[in-house]
Length: 244
Ligand code: CA
Image (cartoon, rainbow, N blue to C red; front, side, top):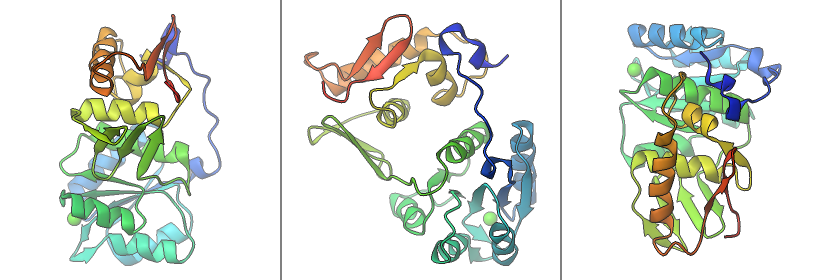
């Protein structure tokens, strides 16, 4: 059962744009993994094209794809060169880099090359699908590595969060939760949206997990309790106050 049927989370069906009807290009030379990604993306309703070399990936990307999923190491070549070449040609197709290279430096390299997101191997295949869908929703030209809202700042590359310049120690899930709100300042966020997009639950789940984590996040953002960054919207969900 889809979570969108939650009463408090009903969202209108999104109309697919022309770009979203183009295939997702998966560039990966490990065939088993490429196949696993293809099956998962197809199960989520995406067309998928596979490629395992830099040259064939460039040809496919130039002919028009919706999102690029690119492995770093492709038969000895660096997949980032695909993104660099496309960007130099003015091609802004969103790109998710997947790699076993997991250091902050490598993530920065991936983003500097023009990648829009970076996922470290091994990953949960559902996480990959969620990120591909996020890139599809965002479209091109929207890459952000830093978000600022009302005294809160997060760095998406370093995965750090600050409040009025002071570092906040967040667990990975808390960081994702905060990032989700900071991408939607002042917008109402329902529990169902959070369960689906932050927890990737696609089934009826205990919804108090959201309230518990939001409580934890609130205490970390403001131990004094004087500033309510995340406010409750009665019977609907939550909202990040842009000016608490
Ligand atoms: Ca590889």
